Image 1 (tube, rainbow over the protein chains, first blue to last red):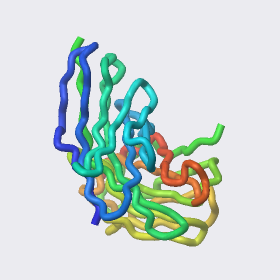
Image 2 (image 1 turned 45 degrees about the vertical axis):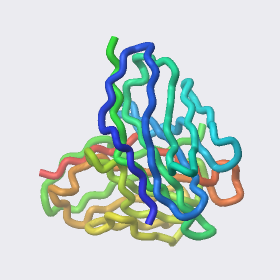
Image 3 (image 1 turned 90 degrees about the horizontal axis):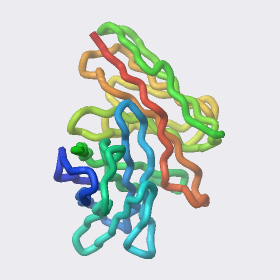
Image 4 (image 1 turned 90 degrees about the vertical axis):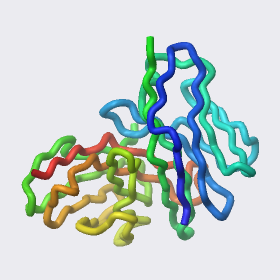
Length: 116
Length: 116
């Protein structure tokens, strides 16, 4: 069965510093991978996604992620963090159940705190 | 603009009562999903539907039911609410196969349910 692991429950980073969030997945076929962000009291917003092709994916809000098949990883990065990036981040893998649709399996999330 | 809405946004109920959470989307998506979010568990799939009259159990379906009578709505019912069902519930939808955003899910704002 597919699974997603986010090893870091909390990360604290200073404003202006770089950020990297780790994500490891387990899935037998070619994965469809996503990063979502959840601001306090809000729903989930898609940051970026990987389906195929270039392994470095650019997303919204200055985020990028790199797919590494050999390491079963899809880590999220941002070169310079802004206070508004304080949120919870979720990695997810999509699995096609049948021709009509798909399911997402989520990691446990990483909460990012930004220090002034 | 197309959107996905949930109601109520907050609900307090008592153990043993039946509760229904509403989810309505105007994306015209065939696929709809219900998740619960609990600390340390990320989002876990409760039920999902790939079209009208289609429903499927997710990984944490015990005590919950859904019905799909039209494309726009997927209400979630807690047959007899338990304290263990205190959680934040998210509804999501995704397009049908063949579209560029096939695997991407769009999330509602969530419903915070407290069972006393």
